[in-house]
Amino acid sequence: MLYKTLLIIVTLLLTVLGVNALAHSQGELPILALAIPALWLLPQGGVAAWLLLLGLGAFGYALPEQPVALSVSLFMMLPILMICTSPKGCWQLGSLMISIVLAMNAGLMALQAEGKLPGSIGATVIQIIGIAIIWFAARSWRPVEGNTWWPLLLVVPLWVGGMEHAALLALSITGIIAALQSLNKLHLDEWIPKLACVLPAVGFATLVIMPQFDVANPILVSWLLVLGGGLLGESLLEDPEEEE
Image (tube, rainbow, N blue to C red; front, side):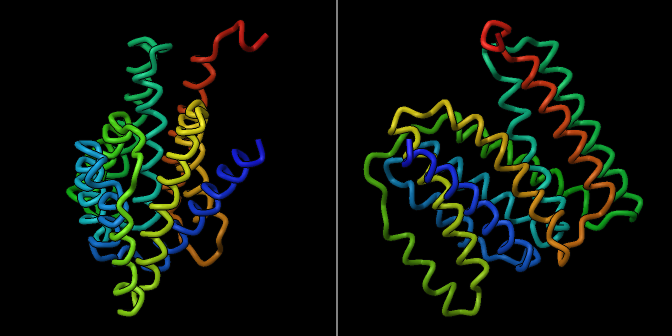
């Protein structure tokens, strides 16, 4: 029980650290920083590791063109996608969740088209696709018995090259994956869907709470509505017998 609690706490702390590093870098990250976590899973990670590499690469490619707050807020798609594909759900609930996400993202892209919100529609679409690929990779992922540790050595040239924030982000993402993998190996994988809902919320809340980071009101409103939709979906999925 203590080990499980420590893993969850470490995962939350790494999320806060990773988002802080991303925000301080202002999205100017080398692709290597996001490739290291996926390379850490190779070669035993199989197709899921390659999909993760593709998804993180697409997300990172569009980072320099987007406000960091917008990029982080898009990860609230992960719990929505999990609700839509839950065996407890139904097509009506899935349609409602998808409608909320589409409406919010369409609103943000409309503001970008009008020049009222930084970033570009193309970059937003690329990041949405990247996050969808990351979600699919997570669904296809299986625990890796022996991770390849040499990719973590690639953090050294990032750090020496003055890209400390990129190195911290790479280590944070790798640490989160390792913690989730440990929960799975301990047969505590029922916590993984819960953390998939909590971690995106914690990451964005970090930007909102920290005074040095600027979060535009449309992004905050969009995130709150998607978060509210996710909480509503979670409550509708709950088994009445379990509630009793």
